Every structure is written in structure tokens, then in C-alpha cells.
Image (spheres, helix red, strand yellow):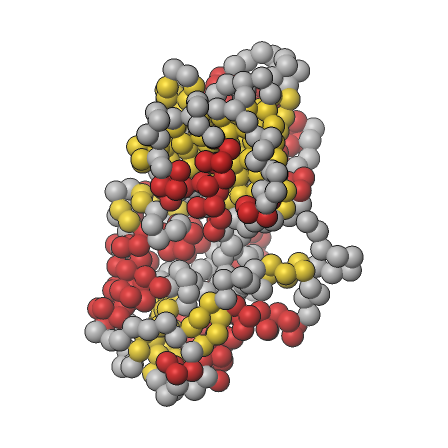
Length: 480
């Protein structure tokens, strides 16, 4: 799918953080694995809405079907009919590197000179893609480079399992990947475990690997455990076995708890839904406000708003209605249409917000434009006061590990104080949850979390960020 000539795709949903990707892999002889993978991708649609694809193997050949669009659009007609076999992987994509195009849709497919074939689906972002691509003499995004490296390693006849073990330590960054050849399913995760990857068991005895537990639930699989950071799991007719390619250093993405994961996702022995309610309670303790009503910004703010209302002993109501059918639309992105975007997505319920002092709970503020329009819209609907409460600290640093969170120059929290941001968006008050409060709301220990977008401490060295800091220091040193 492409935009008409002379036009461009405008994301009318918001200017907040974009999700990255979702992956599913299934090995289940006797099951309709392509359909199960399709269901799994439905459960992960929130992680990527640009393209989707499924690859399946019947033991003799691998067939791939992928295209631009949502999962139900890509497989609307006969897309699943040709996907036969006992083994399948699927992917839904939001591009963080590489253009939004069919070429970059996944799964990636590669043949080897030894007569084999592999497909790969990847969630995350490498920070050494350019160096690896130059070494291979290729161009492409990180997922293409990963597939090319595996194919190159396997060209000598090396088993794919050993090719992954040889290749994975050379990948620097965040990656949770599913791979398959004609007979086996593989899942592997970077040593820091930045992006989630979980293993489930089907009632039939088959296996599922997926980004979130919601994808296991929809296929009927029971969560067994996470793929460990630095671990490769291999699944075939002999069952599942594990091999380690690096020691685990564990830096799970904190933003998964705030926004990325579905509320029904379970990880580290905890529930995302209850973690978000705890964030709301913590916000109410940190920033109480004399108000009449708590309303969420749908959908990610809902559970936190419920927690805030309970802790503050204030009424809770849905004062904003979300149009669930607004996403990317192919129209000329003029400034007036950009300003219209939030009104196409959200509508205030005047009967609920009029003459009320509102506490509005949202998950994050990235550029600030959406929050500003939201405040204006609520005031136009008659709100007496608008107090904004945010369940993440100010985002002051870009993410290099798989979330499209704007450049540092676009981040409103990078250079402005909280009071300056409040003034920019026009709220009566603004409070972000503290980093300590956010961490305490999750079940994951502090030393096992990546907080880079909030703290600027990157657990995986990032050449681009190091260069920026060096340039900043150079300019500072030059100031007389």
C-alpha cells in the first residue's frame, strides 16, 4: 500500500511514542499453524500497524505472505490458504529503522548457497547495523542485515542453530527474534533482554514463542517462561532445547510497563494492568490536587487513572471518547490537518467535563503537541480546570533500542522545565511521576531495567549518542 502521487501518509493518531514490532513463532504438528499465527498477530497489533506477514513451512518449502497494512487487511482474502505446514512465524511492524515499505515488511526471507532457506522476524533495534552492513557489502535495515548474516553463516553448510550462536554475539543493540528453516523454530533474545519474548505450550503439545503473553492466550497456549536474555531456544520434533550465546545482563525496557505492552500482559511475575494502577496511585500520592473528577486519556491512561481516582478518593469517568478507527490516513499533511488530528482521535463528553475541575491522566508526553491540543479541547468543552498527571517521567532522551520516540531536538522534556512544559500545553498544573515512583510500581528490580529515555543512562553503548555528547562537550569547552 502506498500513498497517492504527490501525497504523504499522515499519522492522525498522536505524536506520542510509537510501538515497535510484534513477533510470533509456532511449532505444532497437526495444527493449523498459519491461522494460529494470524490470531497471535491480532493480539500484537498494538505493537505495529504498518505491515504484517506470515511464513509457513511444510518441511519441503517455505512460503511467505506479507504486505502493507493491518493484520486483517493483509490476510483479508486468500493470504492464509497457501500457508500450509507444521511450522510458522509471523510479524507485525512499525518501522524504527528502514523505510515504511513492502521491501522492509517481515518476515525476511533468505536462501543459502547450501540449498537451505531461512525466514526471520525481529523486534528491536541494532546500533551497529552500518558496520555489519558494510562488512557484508549490503544495504538495508537491521532486520535485513540479521537475516543476511545468518544466511552467510549458513552458506558453508553450518546448521542454522550454530549460525545463530555465531551471529548473535556480533549483534549490538536490542533484539528479540523468531527464525525458522524448513524444519525448526528458533527464538533468541539479546543479552540485556530489552524487548520481551515468551514461550508457551499448546494443549496439543505444540509450542508458541511470542512478544507478549496476550498472543499466547489467544492461541490457547499456557505461558511457560520467558526466553532468557542471551538465550537461544530451538524447537523441533524432539521438543525444546536451550543454548546460551552470552551471559544475561538484564536491562528490560521500563517503557513496556508504562505504555507498550497490553494491559493483560504478564511478565516478571507481575501484571501490566496492576502495575499501571500502582503508577496512578503513586501519582496521587506525589501530586494530590483539589479536583472534581479523574478522566483517562484512552487507552493507556485508563488503568492508571483508575488507580489515581481510588487513591485520591475522587470520582472516575470516561470524559474522552476514542475513535478506534482513526490511524494513518493518506492525505496531504498540512499544518491545519495536523492540528485536526487529535480531534479526529478523541472527543470530549461535554456532559461529563463541563464546569468540572479535571485530573487528566496520560502515559507520556513526547513532543507536547497532543497534550496542548487536548487541554484546549477540554477547555472548549467547558472544563473549569485541567490538571495533567503523567505516569512516566519527562522523556528527555531518544530511544535507540526499538521505540520511535523522536529525536532529542523534538523532545519537549529535553530542554524545558516542568513548569515551562505546563505553560506550553496550557494546563492548570502538570506533574510527572518520579522515576523512583515508577520503578517501585513495577515488579522488576531497578538494576534490571533500562531507563535510558528518562535518565540518559544507556545500558548498551550507542555510537550516535556518544558522538552527540562528545560534540556537546566540545562546544561547551569552546565557550569562553
